[in-house]
Length: 203
Ligand code: VGL
Ligand code: ZN
Image (cartoon, rainbow, N blue to C red; front, side, top):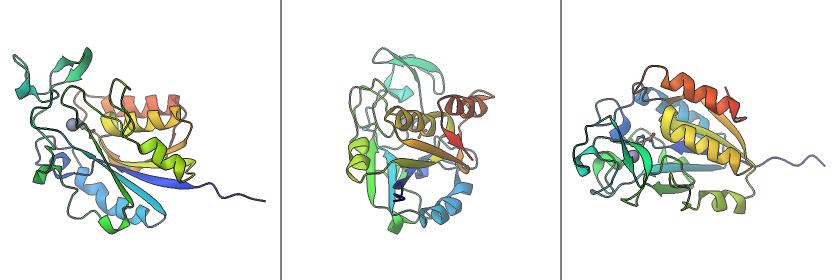
């Protein structure tokens, strides 16, 4: 018998602070929302992640002495970009964007809640010690294949996709439904290449 492969859509961090004009605005981030809404209609399981930081989060430049925004620093022994304050839990900036179709969502995963470690991936903290529960959630639903959209290509989209591969899912990233920060020229292209090299399908 031909068994249907169960699939899920994972929408990464489509939040106000990541939209153009926001403190961590991703160029073109607002352009992908309509395509994401359209795509979500093809999925039974649609999961959104939200970057959800306490005010004292260690990834914020203002919480680190002698740190400048957008520069590389360190957090918990790992290299860490020092970000502007963004996606503070329960703030308006942390809300999913108004135009995203929330009725399609079956689950929300919050990440980055521990002040001592960042969490780019929707599955694990950056040190891989703590899981968000997303992997177990998908397994319980017998999902085998995950489709990933959202922001940012060179951070949370990339790390989520690579972790999903490592967890054994088939992973597809939809190029017309992602946008990147491009802190350094070439970062987006490099992220796409890294994902391809990890076996992730991009189209
Ligand atoms: C993200 C930087 C800091 C992302 C989150 O969603 O890609 N980037 N926090
Ligand atoms: Zn963040």
